[in-house]
Length: 106
Image (tube, rainbow, N blue to C red):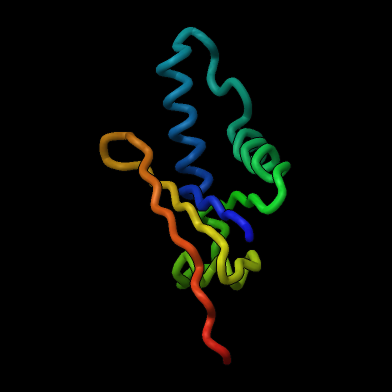
């Protein structure tokens, strides 16, 4: 079984990261690391563990729901865990966990 972490779209992750670093380290020039490299670093680090995958929401096919998009574009299968991360209005991260069910035969 695999675990898929679905993060918000890359631009939103980059914006939130830039804002957090600016608040925590206000005297350092921004960005500390090019933000597109940051999002790649997150994926590379997570995927060093077997069966862990990081997917940014903007990488999923348009017009499909998350679970369908993970199946079609990333090979998610029945029994895989999906953890969707969202930023709430108060700036806190919220997570929703789902396990993919058995797919009906075509």
